[in-house]
Image 1: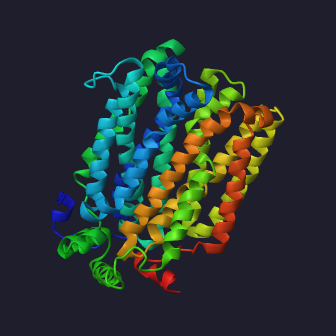
Image 2 (image 1 turned 135 degrees about the horizontal axis):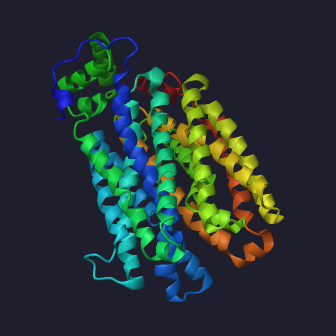
Image 3 (image 1 turned 90 degrees about the horizontal axis):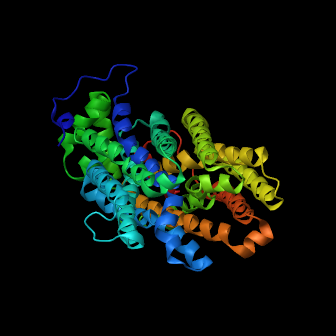
Length: 478
């Protein structure tokens, strides 16, 4: 157990101080690595094609399929990590699972950068160990994507929980923006040939630095009071709560945790099928709106609009800046306006932007208008479906099934992400679709998914604003 848990119980928390914030910031490094490791591949897409795919002389469909798999292979690991995250959360603890994720990030970043080392593979054959390392990193992403918001939600007071969990989304965005700058800076060290030969390796290896920092900070972080109570470590749970609130409040929360863990069995469907189904649908629609197709392939999208390689990377940084700015809007409003209003507004904004972008591609009327459509779409996602879905997933499941239920929802999210990321490369590169729609088809599809997501939220999603995690079970009893 960490030094924090082993200390003597702290004095009452002074007004204005929020000790949960510092612990939340440690956990958000998992979100930072989530964003960094998923987006780092955007700068290496061309090099992967040039080194591992194009020399094989495959047909158009086979080439695009293999290239899409190479870029999106980490997402298979994300699915595996999502599936395992419930077991990790319950057996290793929220903190222990995050430590495993940090180790996986560290190993995979270096391994993917030099897949030939220790494997005996060379040339196009190095694609196999490259994909294996990317899958390993994906397992880390899958674990962190569930455990980081869960950890934050379980140490945050109800009135600040939406904001603190949204910090994790800001960390994801910062990871994406940060890696765009890193990729841009590395690419500026040489020409396209140098990036294809060497630069891409340094892009992937750069993830080892935040991974090492995350691992070091986790060593001194405590686990959450709810997990400690689940494991019968009530004294340790009380010690953590005394760090986060007053002694009287700590006793009250301990009593609520005890009661919530024994209300019903821990069976996955103990609170009904609808509880799980809504979580899965939220996760799926967060991906079906197409966000990761835009983020992963941003440089290629801008090149298809006529931008040079350098300008495409620069415009990608602009996308990251808008993402970051509007995530701040979500952080400022999620505890004030609630979860559902943000999802509805953001979904409508995304739908309009994608339908406009698809039309501009179809009419071959690209330029500033297309760039603005992408930026409006990113803004809509960043203020709503990006952070708010994670807030809801960390809040909406009763304590007795939270680990299992979040694991199912997160695994579904990564499956949807894998499908969207792989299919975009196929849809956008298909000769027949290009001839008929000129790159517009995929964006129309994402616009339609945004509208369907709004309808689902209006009809089925409960509002969790201001509720304690222990009272969430009441939503599903009704």
